[in-house]
Image 1 (cartoon, rainbow, N blue to C red):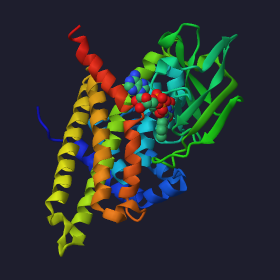
Image 2: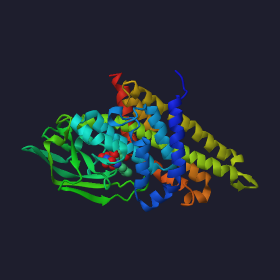
Image 3: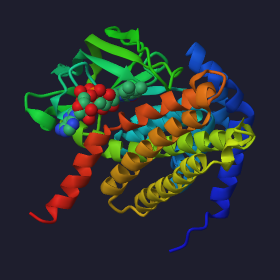
Image 4: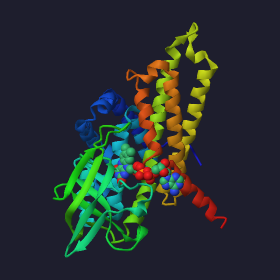
Amino acid sequence: MQFNLTEEQEMIRKTVREFAQEVIAERASDIDETEKFPKDIWKQMGELGFLSLTLPKEYGGMAADHVSYSIMIEEISKCSASMGNAVAGNKIGQDFMANFASEVQKNKYVESVGKGETIMAFTATEPSGGSDVSAIQTKAVPKDDKFIINGNKIFVTFGELAEFYLAIARTNDQSGHKGMSAIIVERSRSGLKIGKKEKLMGVRGIGTSEIIYEDCEVPAENLIGNEGEGFKYAMKSFDNGRIGIASLALGIAQGALEQATKYAVQREAFGQTISNFQGIQFMLADAESKIEAARLLIYQACYLKDQGLPYTREAAIAKLYASDVAEEVTTNAVQIHGGFGYTKDYPVERMYRDSKITQIYEGTNQIQRMIIARNRLKNYQ
Ligand SMILES: Cc1cc2nc3c(=O)[nH]c(=O)nc-3n(C[C@H](O)[C@H](O)[C@H](O)COP(=O)(O)OP(=O)(O)OC[C@H]3O[C@@H](n4cnc5c(N)ncnc54)[C@H](O)[C@@H]3O)c2cc1C
C-alpha cells in the first residue's frame, strides 16, 4: 500500500486547482445569487477535458482513474459546490449511458456529453418519494414501436438545461423493482414539459427543476439496455454517483476549512488573534482530521472501483462520512467567522447552505446506513 499520488494525479490537481481558483471562484457567489448556469465556464471545462475525465478514449475521454476524478471534484467544489455538483451530475448520466446504453446510443450521446456540448439529466425522484426507487409510479406503456410515458419527476439536476433526459419508469405490471426500465427522452419530444424551477437552499444555478412526462411518446429504440432492468442500472449508477457526491462534500469541507483558517489568523478578540484560542484551534484540528479521514475513505472506494472490485459498501461509507464532515465543518467555519459568517460577505455562508444537500441526494444518509448495515448483517445471518 502506498499513499503517494501519481504524477498524473498531481498534474490533474494542479490544472483543476488553477482553473477553479482563477475562473470559477470569482463567479461562485454570482452563480448562487443569480441562479444562472455559467455556460461559458461549462464550455471551457468541456474543452479542458474535465467533463470527460474518466470516459474511455473511444468516446473522447481521458480514461483517467477515479482518484483523479475525486481530486478534480474536490478542487472545483472548494470554489463552487454548484459547479462541482454540475460536473459530478454530468458524470452520473454519462456513465449510465457508457455502461448500459447500446453502441448506437453511446455514439449519439456520450462523446458530446463529455465535451459539454450536450447536457443530460437523470429523472428518477417523484413527488411521492425518492428514497424508495422501487416505488416509482411513472409509467412508460409500450405501444406498437413506441413507449408512452406519463409521470412527474422532481428535483431534476439540469432539468431546465438538458437536451435529453433519462427517465426511470415502469414498463410492465410487475411490482417493485422488477417492472422498471431506463428510457431516453429528447427535450424536443412533445409531452415533455419543464416544470417549476426548484427554489433551493444551496447548489443553485444548475437548472434544477421538475420534469413532467404527459403522454410523451418516444420510439422503442430509446430503451436503454434491457426492459425491466432500469432499477438494477440505477442502483449501480448510485454507487458510482456516491464517489462524486462524497468528493463534492470533501471539497466544500476543505474550502470552508481554508476560509476559516485564513479568517482565524487575522481576526482579533481580547487583544489577540482568535487563532490563539484553544476553542478555535480545536475546531480547526477536528476539521482537518475528519477531512483527511474522509479523503482516504473516498480514495479507497475509488481504488476498488478502478480495480473492478465491489465498492458499494465503501462508496456508501465514504458518502455518509464525507457529507457529515462537510456539514460539521461548514457549521464551524461559520462559527469561527462569528457574525460575519452569517452574512453573504464571506463564502462560508454559501458553503454552509451547499453542504446540506450532500447528506440528502444520491441516497440520503439514512439510506447509506441501511446499505452499510445490510452488508454487515448479511455476514451473520
Ligand atoms: C438539489 C437536489 C438535486 C437532486 N437531483 C436529482 C436528480 O438529478 N435526479 C433525481 O432523480 N433525483 C434528484 N434529487 C432527489 C434526491 O435524490 C432525493 O431528494 C433523495 O433521494 C430523497 O428522497 P425524498 O426527497 O423523496 O425523501 P424521502 O424518500 O421522502 O425521505 C424523507 C426522509 O425519510 C428518510 N427515510 C426514507 N426511508 C427511510 C428508511 N427506510 N429508513 C430510515 N429513514 C428513511 C430519509 O432519509 C429522509 O430523511 C435531488 C434532490 C435535490 C434536493
